[in-house]
Image 1 (spheres, rainbow, N blue to C red):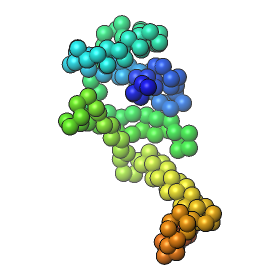
Image 2: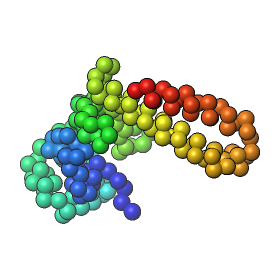
Image 3: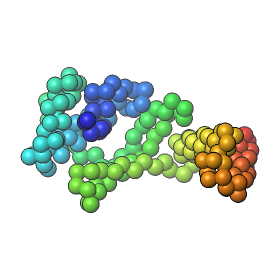
Image 4: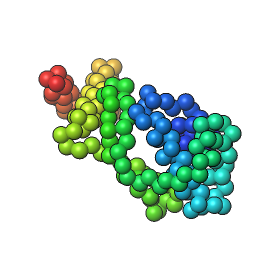
Length: 171
């Protein structure tokens, strides 16, 4: 199958402003990065194939590509819309991975005291609570067999869940 990437997500898979609060800016930056990458690696067949796929499949991409804007975005602020946490403004840094040429890791952070930081903390708490609930469900369904019949591993899990659940209920 195809390798997933941001350009396909934006231009071919119907990404809209429900996810990226600045969908237009994200689209321009994505095309600008692809322009920069094609100038760096003009003989890269997979990149040429991706560009061809995007040109064929998206009128929006065709129009932006025709503008010939080159923008190599490595740091900045990206606004997102999260269905549970609402609007987020996250700082990002795109880091090239020297051990894996062509791969980039994007790291998102939020400043201390910023509402986005509070929203990310809330999301992390929700994810942890969901994990706790899943573990409790496994325990209730006879997880002793799954865990190798070690009752000693079940008690701390239960205590941890009670602590987390009481912490979450106070928010």
